[in-house]
Image 1 (tube, rainbow, N blue to C red):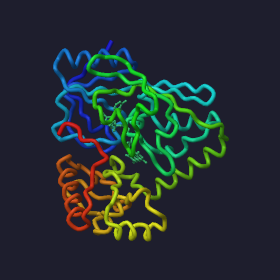
Image 2 (cartoon, rainbow, N blue to C red):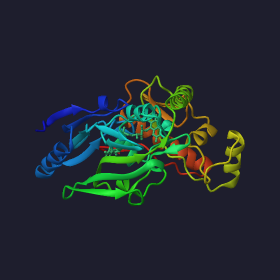
Image 3 (cartoon, protein in one colour):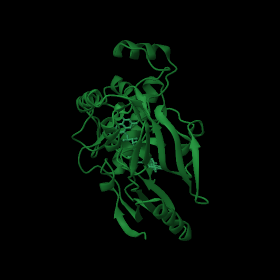
Image 4 (cartoon, rainbow, N blue to C red):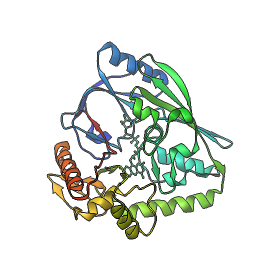
Length: 309
Ligand SMILES: Cc1cc2nc3c(=O)[nH]c(=O)nc-3n(C[C@H](O)[C@H](O)[C@H](O)COP(=O)(O)OP(=O)(O)OC[C@H]3O[C@@H](n4cnc5c(N)ncnc54)[C@H](O)[C@@H]3O)c2cc1C
């Protein structure tokens, strides 16, 4: 039995702590509740937004004029080398449990906020890994007819922070299977501690944000790529240059519009310095995109998803 709530403030459900209310809001603890929620939206002509951990979104100040479905199917199982996990599980909890079971290959995801399903949908990645590397298959609900489909890894069409589920917009990730290698619990936890330390050192943890705001673009200008490689002391991956590095070239750390600010610690993190409005963030984003385009000839593209704009 689902319970539809009205006018639920969404800011608290996001890591950015920005944005207005959902006109309608429901938590779905299992697949039946999810199907019931989708049906409710259809019967009432409501747009649907699927909410995971809210760690990669910016909600507009007026909120979302439809039904927000918060996924809370949180169960997972580990059998042998296979993890089968519900989309609503907290990613880092799952990552720790995989290591606890002496399986290796998920350590890179230590400290990434949000849900397992959100990470599958966006092919979350960090350091040396991403979700796609270990995915065996994904189950997803097709909203138009409430049919559950199973996708092979190839069918998921994973790319850099991208997947078939993200492109389609009509599929809700329900669960996925991932395969890991036999490992060593102690070694995995040491590696994860190291990764979390790196995050604490390099990323702002004291101010709300939605993580890296822009995708790292492929840059055409060979001189700019060369400068980037010299600066970081390593070759660029496929001509990709860190969006934060581009913003840094223009000295824009600390740039502030209203309550929104480019983090002093990491130029690709836009932070809520206190009382930020979504409008402040949007104006800051436009400014950064225009500066990077006009001065460096690179078009930045948002990684963060806009909700209710
Ligand atoms: C401090 C910080 C550090 C971060 N570091 C990283 C990092 O290192 N690497 C990285 O990749 N990301 C990083 N992120 C971004 C974010 O944590 C990931 O993108 C995460 O996977 C998003 O999951 P979520 O559940 O929070 O998704 P949400 O923010 O809730 O949703 C994001 C999008 O996914 C959709 N969605 C969510 N769940 C589902 C589902 N089950 N089915 C279909 N669509 C769904 C939503 O509709 C929305 O469009 C960071 C964020 C923060 C705040």
